[in-house]
Length: 304
Image (tube, rainbow, N blue to C red; front, top):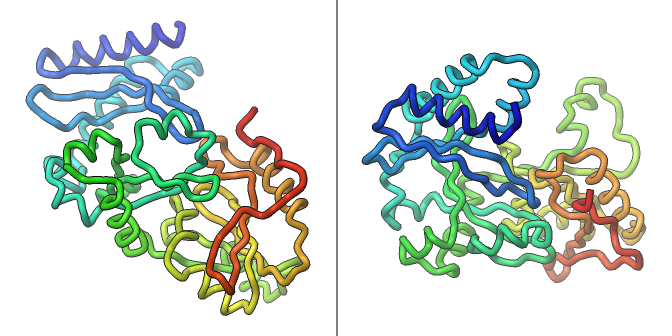
């Protein structure tokens, strides 16, 4: 069965199971770095809640022999669980006052998401873009978020400046930052008592490790760490989830680091989780973050 035939079959079979009281729609959902997934939205007539189920992995399982009926059973179960376990009254999304304490931001690559950014309120930061979402809580399946679009802002009567200010206030509170040495993060060096080999590297992320690269914009987070290290910092964009901090005492080869980041992005980081091929420098004296100057442009991690 061809992929698009499979999508149609899933929608039609679920329509039969659910009956006339539901509207089912298949649509492409843009993701990070130009990627997209096919989602099936199920909305009960009269409801404003329409959980979306991603179908790409279902097709892979179907090709590997999982019966269609089993996949349909699982999709219906996921739909019902999503309605029963929503940790937030989605009707509150209609009111600006209800969403204000839940606005947060994450960082994505601006160039690789130029089409997506046409529909999203955002703030440029270096070669990145600060984009916004609502934190609706979490359950055993993970965090529940809603991407904020220009349509949301129009509905709430909110401008970009207000949105950005709210996110700047809320994000450090909702997603507190933490800095760990590589040894602490791996949990090996502490147990074995061995010393770290090579240059001292530290991981900056938030406490749940999701979209934690945004922590590098938290007020004074880099300044306080640089003061502790008594050095400027090199910031390596490991992924959208974290950055690596390297004390810079004038002995770092930015060109080599930049090419290393690009190579790791291309070979080891999932395309959807890549943040940038550039390396950033934080000045302890000025408190400013900038892109490291290099002679050779880094490889384009998003070209493959």
